[in-house]
Length: 220
Image (cartoon, rainbow, N blue to C red; front, side):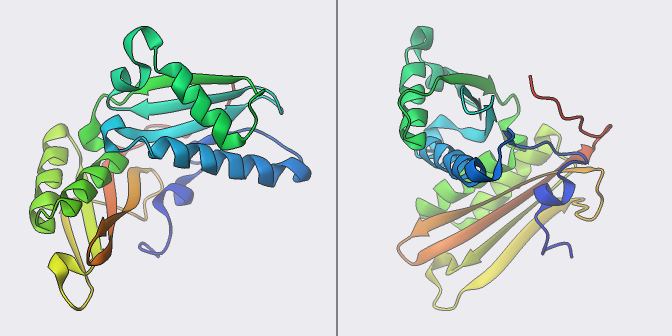
């Protein structure tokens, strides 16, 4: 089961919280879900320089949309005296295709980017696209994560590695990564590296230790 179940969905409602927090009837549900997808897609287009790890969307009925952006470089997203916030609001309004909807942007700092699976995957993808050896990129990422306090980390790459004619899969692991333990705090991400030989998939699992308590869900 370990490799076939998404580590986030496996723990959702137990030790992991929802990244979209809202309630809707059947008529609006698919619309809101698609809007959330578009919001995250457009924000991800800001590129690796923005260092966005996670995007949460909170709605109050059909009115205000509150977007929480977790980034290792919050200063870049906020700008001097909040000058860039208006641009982020415009991106969100464009994604939902509703210019009249009130949007509130909150940018929060990721204090330990070396332990964030999404940022680790972005770093490995960037180096692979820059034609750096995948083994070197992975070992450097693993070393930084372990030094930052990770209990374990596993990184897997699949595709035409180093331009080989036949695609293959390689993975590297250090420490423990208990995928079957529900109490284990596992951060997971998967991203594609776009190279001239085709796509190379990158998957990252980071084990940060056991969660001390379950998640209680409240929307403020």
